[in-house]
Image (cartoon, rainbow, N blue to C red; front, top):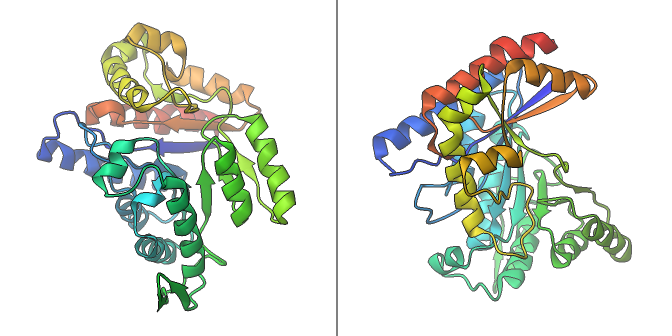
Length: 327
């Protein structure tokens, strides 16, 4: 058995509208093709003001993907909750949850770029306080019952399909993030393995009398890219993979922990590092077999502005060579 995860952020250096439109269209077509294979998961994310168009509207993207599919699930990792009006995103998530019958999950995050807060008129210094208020409001909103909010009585309708609320986790790798999730009785998704913070989370759940669970990417996490010839694959895709890796790295500060953080400055270093891996179909089948019959293929088929035809070649190798060999 193999689970396929497709990640999309629709990066398009140059931001040419015709090319960007084609990229979003390819994303939807690939998600539909994944659905036709029996389903899988799609991962989206949120950033703002990026010079390459990096994923500013994940809820819109999620709604479009879920409307084109019936078996695929979508995870937003993460939605930058403090940048939004909590009533507005509670409504949007509830409606998407209804339309998809529970196939959307959202990880709420603070973010780590002060420029995004400035652009949205939000206080970076007060981000924790804003997050607390937003989470509290969203959880109340999803009950469908009236409640007091900023001096008035509000009610959010319709109620979501999933009860008591749509799948909603908090993200982060710090003790304050762990305490927040425990206090609200919400699961937490760490961006990297942090055993000491995970232990703190469970301690706080016990202290607050709440129940939850913690998750994190495996220590060996990597994105996989398929090519019949691995060397040729790196020659064709390497610069696009490096574009994403360097862009993401430039946003990170020393206190941020992330399994997706690369330290590479060249294609050769990126290949050696192993976070981005180009594999042949035969290698993928062997690794899946070594995993005991269960494998997760975390694919990023349009990474870093990669030509769309290269993205489709990878998907076709998965569909025509890898998955049949594992069936």
